[in-house]
Image (cartoon, rainbow, N blue to C red; front, side, top):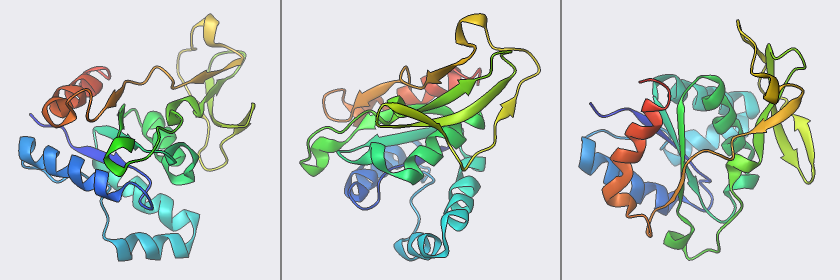
Length: 193
């Protein structure tokens, strides 16, 4: 069964790459990925403010099993990309990244999964979303902490746990057009699904 995916990308710079990935996904599964809103809908949400933009993202995230982050030259700096990654992680969605900078002729940008994470409380029961600003880690203001019924392991307590281990593939070098369904399945399986 094909999992529903949500594409997460910088629409200012990576829309052509998103269209190419969406075309490949439709070719494999017959399904349109989520996260490709009409320009007018995206523009209205941005103009209405962060809350409207987060609601648009959250609605698609609710239906997705895996978030596929398209990593271009500027992706890691996009606040809505950071929001989608953290909200996806907090909602227990599979995550994977695709480097797509070569589709737009850009230089590779920073790995956005290294720019976000969670601060695990000293007792291990609470995870607070966090983002990197320069060398500092700050609480991510748009998402609430999560309390777990069982504590995180001792090695994670009282520190930031980044999402840097999230699989990151290169669309061209790793033959994304062929391998995308396998990567999505692996991300879904990593969650037990």
